[in-house]
Image (cartoon, rainbow, N blue to C red; front, side, top):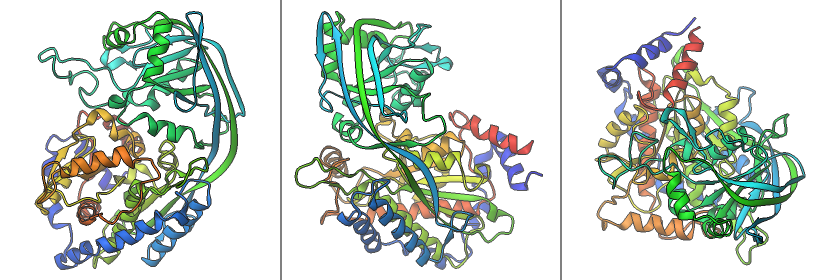
Length: 572
């Protein structure tokens, strides 16, 4: 039997007037019968409590919150204790507040060089390159492997794009560019063609994870991505700082032997040196790679990698709490709030400060999760549907905690109406705008826009969709499984401040603090904007939890087909 709510959803997914249904009078009046109580619950989210939670989670005592460390134990205990204090139920049906996430930790000690033009190009780790093997083995060797430049390393049939062009790369080492090909618009060469890939916006084809995945499918022995700061969206130091430390992957019986033997990044300077030594012009080949007719180019060079892995099995944990819905039928449907609790831990090799406290990234979002949970428990009339508060592990290691939950959900994803994700809250100042990462994907944005207007705010697209931020946080793993997902952030137009006030703060954070030990709590923080954002997310989630229809993906969204397929399977 398929429920009435699911029937309405399936009809809604095919109804061109669905947005009008979502904005119906019934949906508006379903927010809460007690407006005063709703406002009181909303206002329970406050800057003082938020700051206190951030200070605890980002304290030196929590050691940088790396999975598989004492910092994980401290984090799990703290979140469990806070959820219990709020009167929330254990989120795991087994009666606990945790979902165990089996992983293995690996610390790579790589050696690598290229031979080209009769000379050896030595590579210094991690200054020139990083390399890991995600196979659960101690020793990995790739010897005398032919190097092939495969452009952007993309196979996208829907765009008639194939960077491999049938070339056999089995056992070879492929070299790729990051991001999507920048295809000029035929009508305006100064702009990118929005009909091919995402135009200015990065698609999943542009993400490094995809590029390694397709390389493994093609049978390559190793894959190297050339780092360039603008198309990557972050400096090389972000990669070298993360990849040169212990990393993690989800454990599986096959020990990841279907993965590439070696996944690597190199700096642009070293890439240019390699191309020149092999008799090629990097700039010309990069330009050629942006053409649909590009064909792989053998570099007349060899690659050698030797990796020793220090391995350990780790049982990490997602933390999950539940506020059960009040409607006898709808309580078995869910709205999920997510934030990742983990950060980068501690690096004993550093001089001075060795702890990556991760105050903004993402003690702030985790603290926000507690504040949202508090607000929902303060409602005089609880939501009809159940609310899940999910703090996931190992986001910094590849969205592993959310990937594990989405692949092993504790509650059916077909009955999960929406995921609302928080990753790095605003510590600067309240803003007039709200940025939607991945703008145009789902009608959750309609609800967000309506509720933002109650704060005299407006929603706007992200300014730099080419950085692929939609694919870089935990909501993406829900989206991949078809669950409508919303990832929003404070905007850049600060109230009563100079026009560039927020932008300068964000640029300073990226340059000086992102994934560095200096990501700590500072005295000049102003969390009023973060509070305003959390109150907005609270209202959006409540609207969905009490609404008459399921949210859905827009017609052109890459995730729509997955949702429709999963729902149709339930119907059958």
